[in-house]
Amino acid sequence: MDKPSLPSGTRDFGPEVMMRRKYIIGIIEATFKRFGFLPLETPAVENLKTLQGKYGDEGDQLLFKILNNGDFLAKADETLLQQRDSKALTPQISDRGLRYDLTVPLARFVVMNRDKIHFPFRRYQIQPVWRADRPQKGRYREFWQCDADILGSQSISNEADLLQIYDTAFAGLGLKVNIRFNHRSLLDAFAPWLQGTANHNRFMQLIDKADKIGFDGVMNEIKNEGIPNGEDAWTLLHHISGLADTDQKLIALQNAEAIQNDALQKGITEIGQLLNLIKNLPTANTLTLDVTLARGLSYYTGMVMEVVPADNRIPADFRIGSIGGGGRYDNLTGVFGLKDVSGVGISFGLDRIYDLMDAAGIFPQESMQTTRVLFCCMDESAMPTAFAMAGKLREAGIATEVYPGAAKLKKQLDYANNKGIQWACILGEQEITDGTISIKNLESGTQETLPQNQLLAHIS
RNA sequence: GCGGAUAUAGCUCAGUUGGUUAGAGCACCAGUUUGUGGCACUGGGGGUCGCCGGUUCGAACCCGGUUAUUCGCCCCA
Image (cartoon, rainbow, N blue to C red; front, side):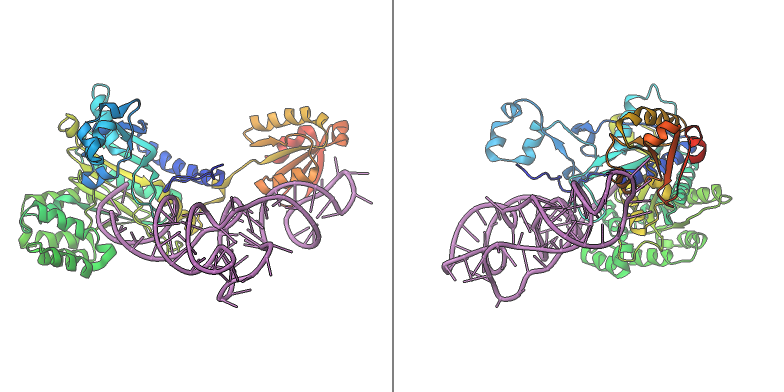
């Protein structure tokens, strides 16, 4: 017999874990709803045509592909088969794959349902995604994203809403975070100085790692790659990044001679609009303009956002990447043939949020609620009475179980104890005769016998 | 795609310079007088030491290969 096992990077979620995951999802979902977002679910399986080419070459490599059904090799190209050229053969033997994120399926959905959708379209989506990445800490091959997006509106008020959602949801979870944002246009302003898009893209990739490898780390990479004016650009950007507050950063950008262009103005204007919108809102978490924030996905074109943990209850050695990210993407539905629909969205990384809250030990008691009442029968003949009484408690919304069968009382109480059940209601010959029930509080150890019709009042 | 680490009971792990019947804790089952949990005690079941090969009188231990897991890099939620 084979020993059972799981594919790497996947996990089972046992009852205790699921309770907590549902708790997190509940808070995030409630927040989405409170901001007027409605749910959407899309299939795990998408056509590869939908997925490919959306995440860059690296992303395409990380797509989980599904083998076609039937005798697919019969139709495959003979030469490619003989050459054992997997890469070239793949398109002939695989037409479908698992979704890589929730944003591209959203774009597909919107394009396919444009006649039914009223813009601006606000949807949320909480589902797993799959990546054939090499797993490591905080990185799984199957993980859940919680996305909220708004399509069909260019107003910066959407960005303001989304930042507010981040702040509210993490406040609700009791996890302190730092919400960082930036505007791609501010970075695009550097492109002419760096002499071209290729250099600029590489520059953005490098500066995005600044919080990981530090100023010198980025500088060394820039030197190694010989990006024109890269060293000066990075010095300037790093200087601005170190300024105390957002206003000073914006002023410094405004005064930087090397990057004066329309892109810069657009970025500064929109950041100004954003800050103006939220100036009267209290925030539970810090919100900072981080001019080194670029974010990887190629489709972002405007504001970008990222959430990193900033909770001192998290052990210092527990390092994990960001737990949320998002931004504006002006051209997303364009690849599916629908132009001029601007979108902006955010994502919560459920698995990492769980890992952090677990490491910090901040799951509240309510996230672990279980059965509250267990009926213990001394004799099978007491079970109909137990069932009737359990039915009443359940109607009252109290999670109740009847222990299956008349096992030894020790065994029944053991079960209740292990499951963290608060009340054991014991029905024996004596109780049945008297019309009473013995209820034992398993936390305090106290026990009393009351008339059966007083049970509900006593427990609730 | 690259590198490091690990692999022994259901779980977490010990296992001496290679030595005869491979251990512990937890979990599980039973019991410590028949209707009272957490604690304690007693007993019990459970392992082809990841897999294949080599060295050796003898391998969980040494060597080679292989597979899996995991941590990091690349990349990225």
